[in-house]
Image 1 (spheres, rainbow over the protein chains, first blue to last red):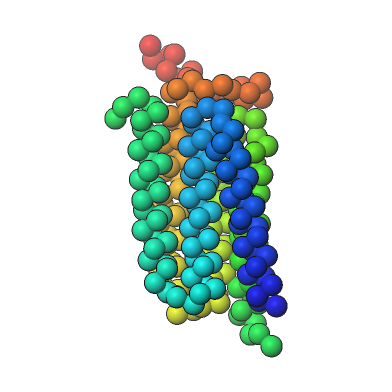
Image 2: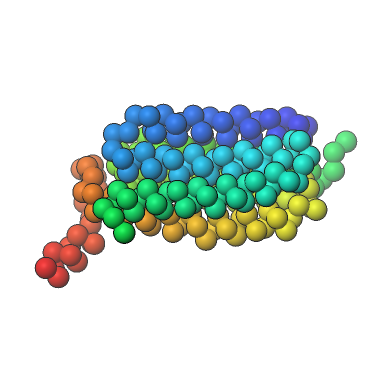
Length: 86
Length: 112
């Protein structure tokens, strides 16, 4: 029962990632790509937490936290670059 | 038979990832970068928080770390969406015909 729910949620998160990847490839403007990148990182954090749940390892949660920090910094830096400098 | 808390966690997990999927669909379907920011940030924030709550219901001993991750996302997601919206406004991206109100542009014209 619970295994089926976990697999269903993994499929849903994976399709969300694929839809964001479509927007990331198609564009058409750099801002659209950065928004799609933001969504992809947020979905990836959920994916890392799901991996930690399936594998039963709590260490992966630290990886998810560091990933959230670095992806946030990346989105901010690229957005400020598009804006035209700091 | 699984415990009640685990089934509740599974249902919360599916609900959260369904919100992530809605965010992805909105990202593809919306006509404009500003609409895409709305769909892509709000829905995914709610979806991630619901998923973290579901995992916390399944593994209560991970609750503190999941709470830290959720609080961090709750603080940083609105910030990144605001910075993205300002970048999209300053680069004068293409707007759809339905996006008519731009109060920031009116303010800037009033000041100059």
